Length: 296
Image (cartoon, rainbow, N blue to C red; front, side):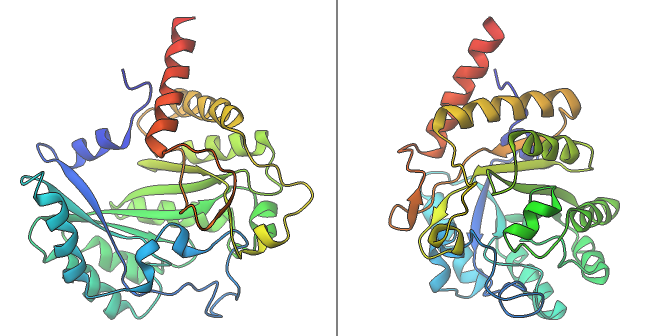
């Protein structure tokens, strides 16, 4: 029993009869919160290499996709693919160059759609309209991180919740699917504030939600000088929170898929928390907890 709508269910709905795999690629983008467009230094918690380890060697988009396809094709010859522009801000740059990269990805045999990871303050309407005209399935993935502006300000996020709401609504109005990404445990976010973020997200026209626990990454401002009120989750505490997240989503917007609950930074970059769990192991623990609650 799934206990909540998972991401594979969403993909099965969007791509009936096809088994889909995301292929993460690096388009060589930058971040407006690092290059001076809106700020410098980036978000207090962020080192992009912690979730994009191959960032140091961006290559030709088609070549990256073909190399990734070879890895999966040996075992799953019928697999179809989504090109996932994940690294940094994938709508930041010259619009013609951006659209050329998206089209290059879509021209690769077996690629049936795009996932475009970006910031909610970096999606001008003309670009969104061009993306909507690509004649393919597109999922816009916005890094919202929190719905509380006080928290966003503390971590130097340099955008507001209102900008997230605006980007989501404009994207959905164009027929684009929308996912939101949140970090649980940012400094300033209480438990109730985090749950309120989930409630607010459920009221928006989104297709999916992605969560992960705050991790302290070596060299980032948050790891170098953690604030006194920073509290990192234990496994048990985070399981409790995720069970509440599932209950909120199921009650308010069961149409929304939950893609994941955790992230695992490379061990050599991670300061804390060191749970010693892979993402699927945490998900199994959560499903066991949800099953036990359902039986009781």
